Structure formats: C-alpha cells, structure tokens
Image (cartoon, rainbow, N blue to C red):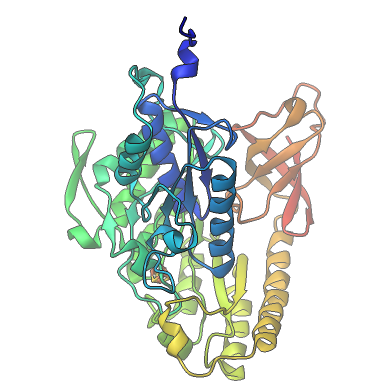
Length: 460
Ligand code: SF4
C-alpha cells in the first residue's frame, strides 16, 4: 500500500540565507517573492529544506570569508546548495569561479541580481509544485525587513570606477529601473503598511543617466527617470500614508541641490547619506571618486542654509595609499567644519582586484588603524554635540519595538536615524496611562537626554 502524503508534505521547501548589504537584501526579496509566487515554501533549517540558496557578499575579505563559511555550513547541513550574489561573480586564484573552486559540489552559482538564473537553477533541481499559491503573495512581494520599513532599489550597477571598489566589475554599469516600475513598487509598499521607504542604489544621484532621463509613466502622467522627479513623486505617493522617504547613496553633484528644498518642505526626510570617503582633493582624485572636483564644504553649508534641519550621514576611509599627514589633517578639519551628524570610518584595507592596490604608498596597518581611531574621536565629538542640541525638542518617532504596548517603553527612530546604521530613540514608559506605543506607528516624543549615539525621549 502506498503511503498517503498530506498536501503540505508534497510542497517543496527551500532554505534561504541572505548575507550582505541592503542591495543584496532586495535581491533576496525578489527571489523569495518569486519562490513564493510559484508555490515553494521556505524552511527555517538546512535539514528541513529540499535545497538551500545562499545569497553571498563579496565586498571585503571578512564578508568573503563569512559567505564561504555559510556555503560550507549549508553543504554540511543539507548538501544541495545554490549560490547567488556578489561572491558568485568573483574569480578564484585558479582563474575559474571562486565559489566553485572552494566548494565544487554546489549545484549552481550566479552573480548578483540574477533572479531568473536562480529560479532556473531551482527548477532544474527541485521541480515546481503543481498548485502555485499565487494569490497568497502580497502585492508588495516578500520582504525581509520588518513590515513597517522597506528598501526600494532604483538601479543596479555603477558607472564610476573608484579605485578601492570592485562593485562595478561584479555588478556592471548603471542600469536604472523604469521609473513607472519603481513608483508602482513604492505605492504597493505603502499600501501594505510600510511607513518608511529607504531609497537605495550604488549612486542614487545618477538615476536615469543610462536611459538619458527617459520619460516614463505613473498614474497616467509622464515622469522623467531622474532623481528630482523620482523624489518629488515618491513624496507625493507617501503623503496620504503619512510615510517617510529616506535617500541613501547620494553624491554631492550640483543636481542634488534641487532636492534640498523638497527636504525643507517636508516632502522627503531632511536626511542625506552621502559617502564622501575623504575631503582632500588629491586623495579623492587617487580614489577616482564621483564629484571629486566639487567644493563639498561650501555645498554642505548651502544645503544647511536651505534646510537647517538636514542631517548628513557619511562614510570615510582613513589611510588610503599615499595619504600624507597633511591630507589626513585636511580630513579632520573637514569633519569639524562640515559637522557631519553621523560618520563611519574604515581603515583602508586592500580588496582583491581593486585598482588601488597598484597605487604606491601603502601605509602600515598600525598607522591606518591609528588614523581611523583619530578620525572617529573627532567624529564622535561632533556627533555628540549635534545630538545634544536636540534635547528639549519634540520629535516624530517611528516605533521599532514596544513590548506590552510600550507600557515599559520601547525603541524607535527619528528622521535623523536610518535603521541599522544610525542611532535610535530610546522611549521611556509614557507618563499618561492611556498612551500606548505600537510597532510601525509614529509617536511624538520629547527628547530628554542622550546616551552615546542614541537619544532618550518621553512619549507625549
Ligand atoms: S561609486 Fe565608487 S564606491 Fe560606489 S559602487 Fe561605484 S565604483 Fe564603487
């Protein structure tokens, strides 16, 4: 007698591990959405899955190691593994594919943003279920972030060739998503309850350059594929939902000046994530940074005149090859004068395959680390002083955690804090007994103090 299987037992299950940056996360979401649309289920364990997909990161050596280890764990725990993501595009020492050299038994390897290739590999190794539950897939797709915020990827790849970066060799030149598709996705996300949309790409200010700012359509009206129009329309779409739009990876081109008034009027959050990396023109030239000829300090001052509330986050590299003590001192001065609200800093480290490896003047590790520490000391001083200025203010806070309806307090973020990279607002228990806090909802809160990178606030 043949064994009778429950309908659920016949549904193929896929394990999924997502590593890397927000861009990789959106690739994972696209793959998971497709899997779900076709009726596959996901498994929380390697053992419980019919196969495992690992979305890898290949940016820095630590990430490469973590990705290779995870593939090894998935092979040990399951044995049937498909690898996708940035590491999948990298060559190994033998000239072949790095992942295949290290883990020859993987079923398939693809590069980043390769949903169709990944699905082809899934179909070849784990046939589709017969009865796809298409109707169960939310219009906004499957999201890996909490329900109330989501990343919106507007383009892939990059036209720049910064000498420390290998992303263009892995992800190719800039390809902008059609503006109609981007706006449709944004609308679906707000409809599904998203209260904060984080716009990401490799270079948000370059959106549409590759398609010559082609005109697309949204809601029956023409819209140019360009950052300004994108931001304006996203602000319009977000408004009825009372939702936030936050911009990441913006370079200080003159065209960005046009976006600042939209921040001043509240159309988008007055928050700019601008990866400056350095301030000295010679270092920026050696880095081949976009907008390296711009007068960044003056530009920031003008932005602050137009929109005094603006918060600027940035990342920097200390100890780039050939960096002199004078050039480094220039960076410290810039940090003090530009008053960057939130700054991160890496000590330069060579990345396999990056052009910067051929620049003479590699500094000893101790010096690179020492400069990073000196930079961070200045950055933290600036940041602490800027945070302190908020004490006494009333701010709108998006609640990220509030156990027991927030009776014992919770954690949220203000417009000045992007999730995962900036600080938070620690919410004290509300004084009014009737006041509750709910994840994914906004509350007003009075800032009563600071704690490291965070603010402490009383919900009002
Ligand atoms: S702008 Fe530079 S650092 Fe950023 S992805 Fe492009 S090449 Fe890399």
